[in-house]
Length: 288
Image (tube, rainbow, N blue to C red; front, side, top):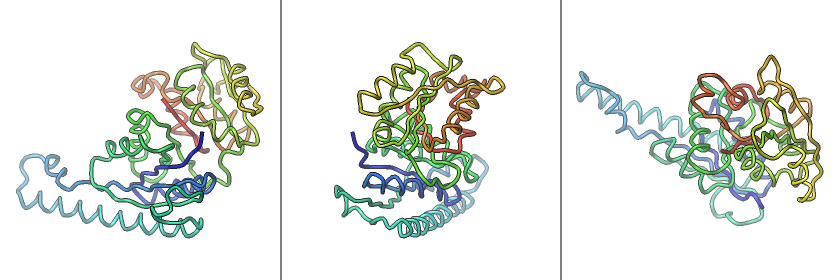
């Protein structure tokens, strides 16, 4: 198992700086390629949203403004990409594909953002998205859910601040579900080279399925020693207890299954995935 290609969809510089830093760190860690993807809005999609009562001239003006803003955003992201790749000393361009060295490329495409991200993520070992609480737009959360629900691939939520390390101390949130098992498979390349690994379990979090002790045994088959620790909810919030346990372990990466209860239920009543998305500060790898 190896990690050779990362995808990083970016929509704005405000939310993308830390995610780009994270992606380049991972590219260097694995001597992999990072594709930074910016999806521009098709100005023709603005017309159906304009509604009735607007003249053709007004709709044309809106389309022109959308195109201008989209172009300006793309230029800003290209500048951010150039600065970051120079800072990390990462080769730029597709000519370096397949070599045992870190590289990165920047691409701009036009289309529906969630659809394009899901399509591209299907051919990436891991997709990195900015933290949903970073910046001022909701595109990061939309990108994360597009990968989770429509790509069949793992997604890594970047931390809020620049990480110093990723994957040296790995926390595995385990509740026995197939979503958790899928996340475990995706995090195993990191587990194999980690300095410390901890499986986090809770009676309040667990579903029908293998126990945390069985996960420790499974990891041992891969030549890695891990321990298993019970955590308790904080103020009846399981996600808060999980994040506190990861912090106590000094984890710099956590994996978890996402939405083992329905997303709609979590949106209405809250849930562990929702709490982690809103409150985690460390990188979190998720699968469904």
